[in-house]
Image 1 (cartoon, rainbow, N blue to C red):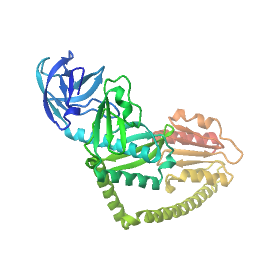
Image 2 (image 1 turned 45 degrees about the horizontal axis):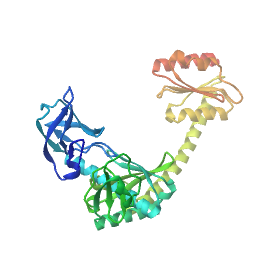
Image 3 (image 1 turned 90 degrees about the horizontal axis):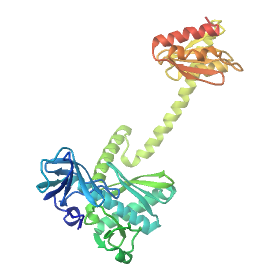
Image 4 (image 1 turned 90 degrees about the vertical axis):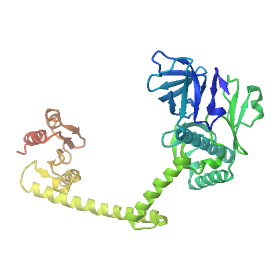
Length: 395
């Protein structure tokens, strides 16, 4: 198969890893190259381009522009137009892309066959690939996902073949296409999965479903009014399984539970943590009430309450305790360089205090008789503290 005089070995000889090709065009900087033949699939149809080396120089990208394949190199090519150069394919990258694209056809074909769900877009990502489908997220519950996994596994086990058809536009109606073909083409390439799917596609594919080994949908989420399914296949799926297996082993060891009991044990741990959290909040509130009572015992109309002993949550607990006591006061959290101010029930914070923030390079604000501020260093923090106490009449 050729286009604009370029032989496309990625279609005609997909198992070829090395070949000689003649330079037919070269940009002034010698980094954009046209050839009479190429191994490298150009980016398109949701699939990234192939990788490799051309004349010993690493490929940065391969694109198709106005019917011509453009190879962009990482450095200048030493050859001249008319010279032959060696092309070397990155076989690992090609294999991975072919596995993910073939898995997409399998998944989309099953969704359409079994549920009438149409695929609207496909993206082959660096770690996971995605399809956007016209269905609500609720259609992909646990039972539905198990059915999809089972259907995929059955076709992989059968080794359903991927068959390539090259059709002139006038013959395309003879094939039961899942989606409309592109217009303006002299020849339309259709990828068939035997007994399942026919889809117009320019991408690279495996010979049969058995080459995929494993395909799994790993996430379903709402996206742009549709559902986005993320999946992995082939080598990616094997690596994902290994990663998850290590994570499960680690979790089993940490929780002292076998893998099949992890969910149950995790539920018990969460319930225990929730109960501990309630008790912790109660203890924190009790401490704050004691701290506020001690500060009020000093007789100041606007006492200073130190909250560091209670940790980060102490400042908010002390503000709440001041409010419960019907008192105004300033709370200092020195470790976090933060302050909080309570005006007391039915009162407002003096306007001068929030306005001091910028003077001491602080950030914050508040409402309903409460105010909080955070400062960049100890000097700014202490300066604000002194000024606020003077303004409020507490020192």
